[in-house]
Image (tube, rainbow, N blue to C red; front, side, top):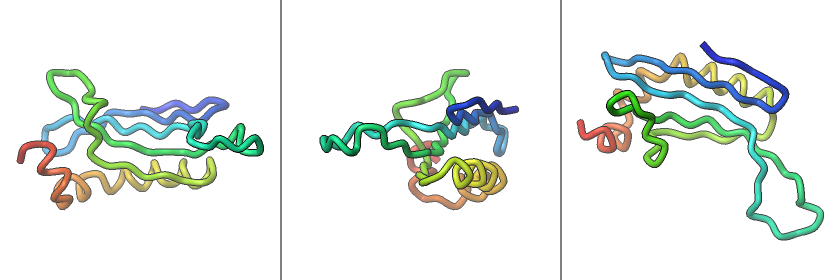
Length: 100
């Protein structure tokens, strides 16, 4: 289903209406800042990707959400897992990206 290690990585495949999606929540270092006191700032991000021909389409995310803490990210991942059918079926942008 998903796994977790020291740096947050929650990853799983979910099927919605016979279509496979990849749900990924990770910890990542922000490198946009040039301030010395901002050298190690981490954010947590959940992204949803469609799959095509059993390949994950990493270049065209359908949905994303960022969090400040590991706990928020873990809860957000769970929430998005539960709400993914509604997100996919009601999000006009998602439907357009999927070509529906």
